[in-house]
Amino acid sequence: MTDKPKREGRVLPAVVTVDLVIFTVRDDALHVLLIERGKEPFLGSLAIPGGHVRDNETLDEAAGRELSEETQIDSEQLHLEQLHSYGAPGRDPRGRVITVAYLALGPNLPTPMAGTDAKAAYWVPVDSVLSGHNKLAFDHADILGDALERARSKLEYTTVATAFCAEPFTVSELRRVYEVVWGFPLDPSNFRRKVTRAASFIEPTGERRIAETGRPAALYTRGKAQFLSPPLLRSIDATAAQGTTAPPVQQ
Amino acid sequence: MTDKPKREGRVLPAVVTVDLVIFTVRDDALHVLLIERGKEPFLGSLAIPGGHVRDNETLDEAAGRELSEETQIDSEQLHLEQLHSYGAPGRDPRGRVITVAYLALGPNLPTPMAGTDAKAAYWVPVDSVLSGHNKLAFDHADILGDALERARSKLEYTTVATAFCAEPFTVSELRRVYEVVWGFPLDPSNFRRKVTRAASFIEPTGERRIAETGRPAALYTRGKAQFLSPPLLRSIDATAAQGTTAPPVQQ
DNA sequence: AGAATAGTGTCTATCAGACAATATATG
DNA sequence: CATATATTGTCTGATAGACACTATTCT
Image (cartoon, rainbow over all chains, first blue to last red; front, top):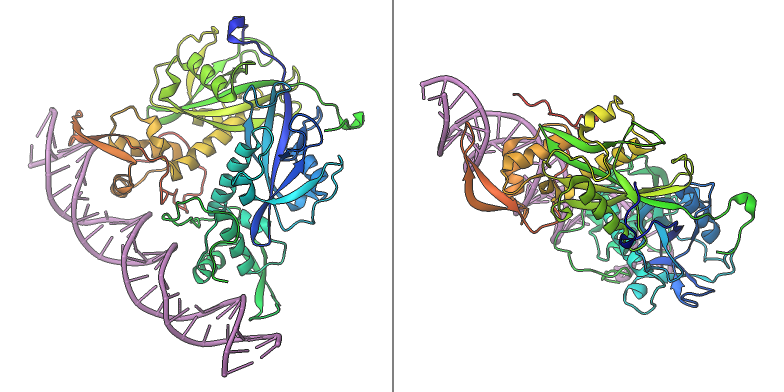
């Protein structure tokens, strides 16, 4: 708390921002919302959305506000949680910027709009970002990687997977979420047994949905449970880093 | 990114600090390192240690530096991980302060020193803090609660419990860590089966330690594994919020 | 009927909880 | 021998993975 010798570095005020990794599942692939930067640095590069924290709001409120601005969706509808903070000295060439990253999960959202800030926004398959086709601005690739791992592990021991599903949803849709986020197929029978027997994970509505083909599927809504106990673990042997597009399901 | 109407709040530079929740196990109870504040605000109150992030260091480096300053222990010896960031507008009466909280776990550390900053530092049983006997400064009680829950859940699916043990250690010592952090007793037999069969959790040294009484215990060191798979779950029925002192073990 | 998707049932290996029994030290 | 702690073994119920089988719709 007392002053330190200057050669060890001085205490400087920093700019604090929130950045958002917004995931959704569409077309059987995990997508992330990215914006095309309209100014330097990294002009023209893709980046995750974010903005400054204002002086009258909490970090969570700042994240919720940015989420609403970017997705134009009631942020109450989405799962939003703090992910990690990033503050390496050189991460922003303009100066010291500490960013508190948030993870947001939502059902297949309306194709993103021309943002309020006139930035172009796109849903981009996470796979295509990870494979390095589009380099992200700043350290956003690191943030995205951390967000993906957080999402994958949260599917194991919480019920957040339902945040990816618009209500009402079917067990198959919920299973598809797991398959797409984890990157490998799950046994439909065992998955159904697990999610229907877990207390308050999903609640049957009594309704059914008739598809173009096949037996109609029962519909469910989200249950009250926040945690899955015992968890639904990624199989131990499925260690290899799989993709986030359609898993090798026989189609 | 563009300017917003001022009535929504302005972007102001903020002060960024790191705060440390440092846990250790001593006398069969979980303890946290607290300092007695030597200046306003909250002069005389207990608080978790922390300090400003300097302009030439990462957040992790700042946390490691503060840890060394507070514990005078090589921070390489301790487990250190980022916990969560706290930035509510009113959390520090002096102005906007964003703090990045870290969680540190270590073996029974030397009784804390007169800190480099001449602050008194104490190991305080977590139980006595949670029960409200000593109110912590700022929002440090929230941070402590979050840290405790993080530590408890990390014991389930990672191998960090060994960070609480000075090497070499016995299986009973490791079990005591779980019991003290979780707050309830574990079956010695089942615990041993679990930790010895988990791949690379602990490695036998071949040595034994002779105690005052009883059969000598085999000694182990930390294994290379970072994760426990399958996890060692807190029993599902052990839902009640137990204490962090000696669990109801027959003594 | 055939295709497609939803849902049920069963077998088995594994694992956790309960707890009995044995081992090795000290006094 | 009694006591205390460490360590091994055993029984049993719950659960996950594999996979066969049945159900219900549409064309």
